[in-house]
Length: 442
Image (cartoon, rainbow, N blue to C red; front, side):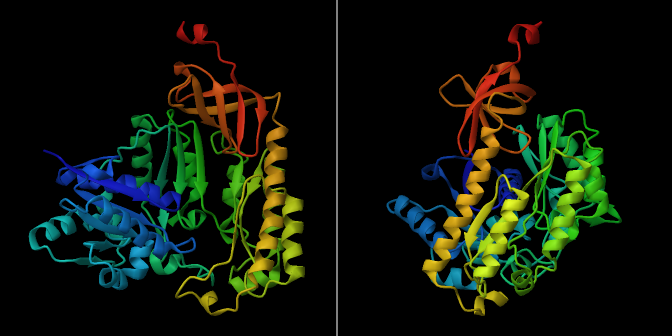
């Protein structure tokens, strides 16, 4: 009988990619994926250290598993990902229910570690940085993803050392995967039925393998007939090079949404964050991209109430949002991460922080609503991803990553089709497919 593994994933898209590759890996030792925790022989929690209280969420989840298996044999419990990397020794000491702790650069060892635990019943801590060996191993196991839209990691780690960020400590230094191996995986995904690829990296636009850059990858993947759309995330303003900007003028499949985290509209705060870019640099990139392709829109990340942020700094962030009109962004109050420089800074009053966050989010949400409202009555291109359970509605995304729910038909699946938008709210567009199903059958 097959052994069953249940994986719960927190955090970024790279964790989602890693989870899928873990499934591909453990299949080699007889494990199959299950969506039912209660029937699992192995429970893996793939963690993220970016958001607040990440560590406590792990213990909460482990507590839930303990409760589920209180009266029967426990599964092998594995904590993986960035929290595992950062808190490995403490976790094994604090929670005896955890059997294996494995960092994000050691997933190529997961089969060996599971089998080692089964034979020795001894707790395992595997958190060495080894990105090269990891990807060499994974390159020999086909990516089984068959989703219409799928992730593909091309780069890991970070050398920027922003003062608020744990990524350099949990994912290690920047590493770019071999150019040819990425293209082989992209071709494999295309053969699986994937129609949209999102290229991933902690600093994805810092990709540099033997002078091949992100722009080269985009132009090569574009040659695959099966791939209809290409995206990438997450970028750093310092790495928006001229060759990447110029791709937006020639590529037919690169989507016109640029996610480029700015974090703050104040040069003073950017310097304190050690971001290594200024607002003038950011505007320069924005203007170049809009000139080369007027369809381009921006989204971003914002850290609100970063230590030292005064009213002037905050207003500069609001001014930036008004000027660039970000259409879909993430914003959070600063929360310190142990081990980072900013963890030692004095926090801003909580009431002030919340007031600022509410103001920024109101502005950002208004931009989203206005953008969606502007599409009502218009025809837009939508990549159809799936049918909504239990109904006749279909789900897809616009070029700008906005969710679209519409009346369609099964023949639309995996295709980019025209949808007439009838209504909208902050997060979603609603409409009807304009494709003629009889013509499509003929």
